[in-house]
Image 1 (cartoon, rainbow, N blue to C red):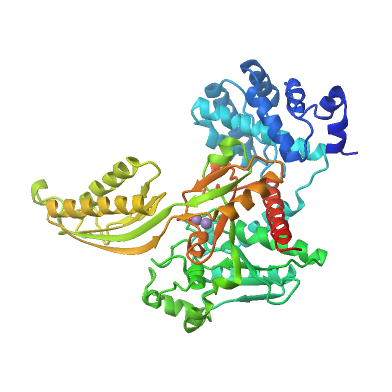
Image 2: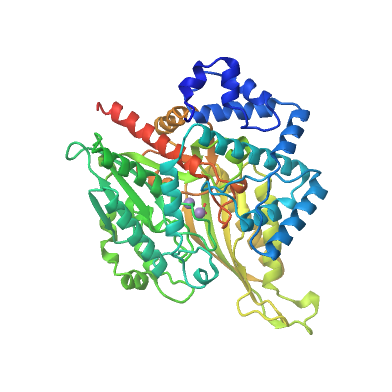
Length: 571
Ligand code: GLV
Ligand code: MN
Ligand code: MN
């Protein structure tokens, strides 16, 4: 029979310790120490107490934990896998002084296979010893979480469904990436359209009352309230991706509310407000320079001039919409009337290491950094690489190189500013030609608009100065400007209470990444919930992932927020 928290809370100290025996092999004192914090309202709270007990333990206890926690590595199906596992394990022992401790199960809760173990060991092998020690502790906590789950019969069923939806949706990927097993879904490609249809089907199957794909490609599902004309809670995130993406960025914020609506529908429950879940068609700015096309359409900020922007193949946005069967002329009608809306909430994977390192599954977002983006073109003179003396060159690429280093220095001089050149090319360049042209992107972000603007001013001034000094011409085109978006205090507090309702500390943090919420911020109150990512929270990378257990907590927190909102609305 699985344990229950009620029994754990009521048991004698010895009985309670024996209920938790084996969670942290090699360190029986950990459970006893955590039990000092009884009673526990949730398993999430108990896990936090166990984590604190490990953090407070001395070096000897940690060494014993690591010794006893060393993983039995998967066997491997082929001799190549077996050899690689043995080689990596030996190299790991040599570098870190102990056997590797891996999570025994993956983020879905399935036993780790040899391929996953090899990838994990290869990634961790070169870690500095102190960082790897933290990673080892994180693996020990994950293994304890998996054992606790078994001991208490606690299956994260909704988290598993949502995790599986991410897997299934990732089957759709753009040509050039799909063949290599990589995920890329850019605006209005066939893969993008297939994603929209799949989300639409899931929404219909999940009990939404009205579902459709709008003129900009957003999938919109509406779950009606108990009464007609009740106000609307707007929620959602984006389903497009960066190139070679992770599976969770954006999509988690669609699937968490979808699962909540499915549960409401299964219970036949109506709330005093409608829930409108929007799977935004575009947030990543990959195919066209303009971005936030999906959420921008809802705020009335979809600019008709964007329709003439062309992609790398010369296909205009207008043409892409036409080929997708969408009517660009209907986009202005997508604008929402904020008076009908309570506000906007968005769930998103954190996309950074903060929660991973703190050992916390959820956080309320305090603010989203402001951002400005440019496309820059520097023009010099293409000339012979062998015959043009160094002093006579008008090299566009070395000017760009100077600017890149300036961006790095200037952004680092501010607290919280970041500057990135993610795309950089010498169009039609050759090995034996001095670059006559260089094109690159600039992405500048800061916690406040004033700080972002000062950064942009300095970077553009430096660009002008470098080009003047080197006798080059330059043009810059601003392709995006998004204001910093502080969360609405009342909505942020709702998230904090929803997190606390799971037995977790209501951690609050700013978002360095941009989100659809910063667009909706322009017309209604908004606040976001962050969910911990695994692998140090890496994102915009196929290694991005989160566990079913954390997704389950996000669904529960979302449900708590809905319940609170329903109570506030007098139902
Ligand atoms: C979106 O992912 C962004 O912050 O660039
Ligand atoms: Mn992203
Ligand atoms: Mn995103």
